Amino acid sequence: MSEPKRRLHPETIAIHSAAKRPETGDVMPPIHLSTTFVRAPDGSYPSGFDYIRSGNPGREELETCLSELEIAEVAVATPSGMAATHAVFSALDPGDRVLVPLDTYYGTKNLLHTHFERWGLEVESIDMSSPTVIERALERRTRLIWLETPSNPCITITDLGHAIAAAQRHGTLVACDNTWATPVLQRPLELGADIVVHSTTKYIAGHSDAMGGAVLFRERSETAERVREAQTEAGLTPAPFDCWLIRRGLYTLACRMKTHCENAQRLAEFLETQDGVERVHFPGLASDPGHEVAKRQMSDFGGMLSFVVHGGRERAFDLVNSLSIARPATSLGGPETLIEHRASIEGEGTQAPEGLLRVSVGLEHPEDLTADFGEALAASTA
Ligand SMILES: *Cc1c(COP(=O)(O)O)cnc(C)c1O
Image 1 (tube, protein in one colour):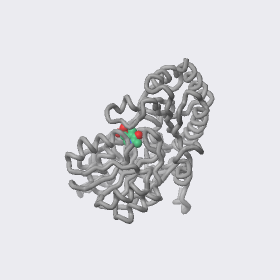
Image 2 (cartoon, protein in one colour):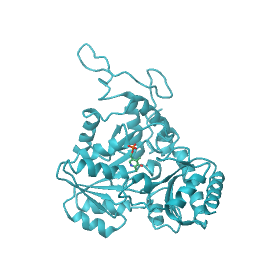
Image 3 (cartoon, rainbow, N blue to C red):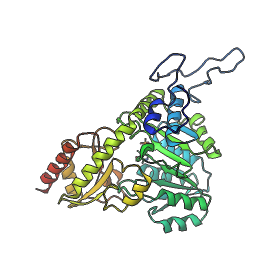
Image 4 (tube, rainbow, N blue to C red):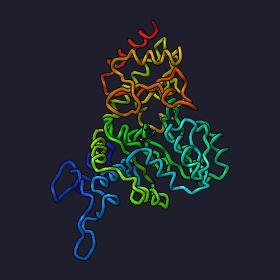
């Protein structure tokens, strides 16, 4: 296949990226487990690989595919989403100030407060849905602003274009955790962000059976080099089999996202009509405060929703225990619908209301899902 001139669509990129292996003719990538590679008589490494920590063919294929999907110049695969997040913050310097959303992913917030404050980063949590709050916070010397949209657990939408423009006026780096939207629905680098972070454990791997992460950079930079060093020098290096599973997930990402989005839309619309439900957070609902912005910056509204039941924690647990298809477990992005009471998993300091349940809407038939939630709501009212 000669190099296409057109930019291909994500569906096509995900399948054909780095798929040429003339030496073996493999259509699907093999798993390279070798930790070390032979040197030529002159001491060079003819394959370009020397040792597993500095490079692995499958990891490179995964990185190439991710960089083509996000339109990034540099991609660094890591063994988890938190390793990716850690690598980004460790590329900053002690004394740097960072802005994060009030409702940033709980693990990110914990990492910043337990590790990076001790390490010398100054962290401020702000309401990213308010342009004036962002502007005011940026006025003080800030090295990096961290965005996450849609957010967890209230599925809040941040206007990426606005936040990125404000950061650029102040010379501040912009990193966006794009785990929930995936490059199929939203591409922050195209909107001017500098860095995208993924937990590939979620939609990208897509089957709740592999852990991974990635950091992507719009352009080469010193920060990108530092993140690469975290992978190859500090050892935030993913295992070959995980890279293979995650690369495998990418083949079907676009078609899975389509069904996740359709099912989430159906379930959100259904929940909105239910008496036991106080409110539904889902940007695909016209009533949602993030609807217009999400419509502008995403190609669809995603597979994550949350809702608040009347009756607080007790009713929420009752409902979860009355469901027969949706399973009570943390995490997201797999084929199965998962439901989670966020306040009890996050514990002290949680922003989640006691009656809130977060749903990762899976790939089951939507009528089976709405029936399951309808029956459980009826059973838990009684
Ligand atoms: C899960 C998740 C992470 C952390 O990723 P791990 O792969 O579990 O380390 C970070 N950000 C978001 C938005 C997530 O959902």
